Image (cartoon, rainbow, N blue to C red; front, side, top):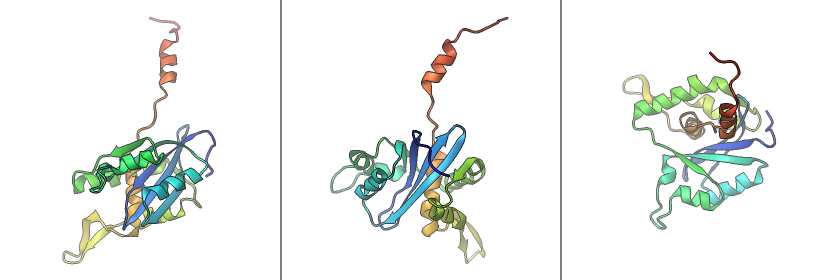
Length: 191
């Protein structure tokens, strides 16, 4: 599904250095949540991702990153969030870390059952991300001969975790002016 010019695009991230960094690009038009793009790379710094974002023709809204964006680097004392914002990726909204396995599973539940049916995907631009979502699975516990209650960490987990950042962290923007206008209109009729 092509992006609609003039509508903001929000991004949802999973950060990695040795692992992949994954980014979903979301555009909300009316009631539709359109995932118009997906990007993934390994071994790159935030400057690379800032360049990738600038090369796309999108007008950006918020950038949602997982809890590790607040981590301060030992050498500089600067967080990944601050680095991203200094590179023009702003504003960055940090989605809090899942407290435990149950919270991770609740986030997966939110992504799959509660949100997925409301989403549209650009099949071509999101093909790698869609493959990650399709391949995301629980780890198999050989000793107990059953699926474990946590996800398998493989190439699929990065795209799926970035999508979970969306599912648990996305906050639709409120059109404050439309609300003010609606509330200030005179009420017709009455009791």
